Amino acid sequence: MPEFVNGLPLHALIVHAVVVLVPLAVLGTIVVAVWPAARRRFGWLVVVVAAVGAALTPITASSGRDLERRLPENELIQAHERLGDQLIWFVVPLFVAVLALMLVHTAAARASGPKRTNVALVLAAIVAIGLAGASGVHVFRVGEAGSRAVWDGIENLPAR
Image (cartoon, rainbow, N blue to C red; front, side, top):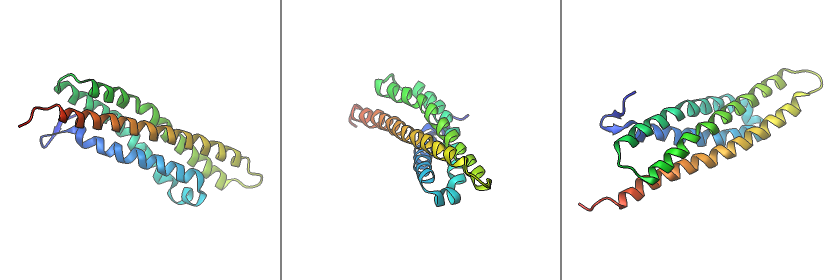
């Protein structure tokens, strides 16, 4: 995988996809979990967004490690890296939860007679909302640590 694209570090480019897609997956998961009409219309789109966000997370972390090796040792970058490495443990379960929610939703829509799947649907929605909240908080923490590493690091650069 290239470390640079047109002179820019790959991490600086790809991180923006994760910063956009994971919060979209978080918000989309909450919306489709609590609003059946949105679930019918946008549920599978949210699954795709969560899948792409989850797939890009390890690529982003890897490109960040490549970038870190080129920079002077810095506690802020190391804190950002630690948090970034943990993000995969939030986004993959979020993807699995919203996928499970949509599979249960699809099964419930096809079922006839007594709806046992309603209980499963409520449980899947609760789990999805919980994982969405945790993912949202953690992606914020990673991004905040990354912005501190960049902007606090700029303050410490010598003036021109």
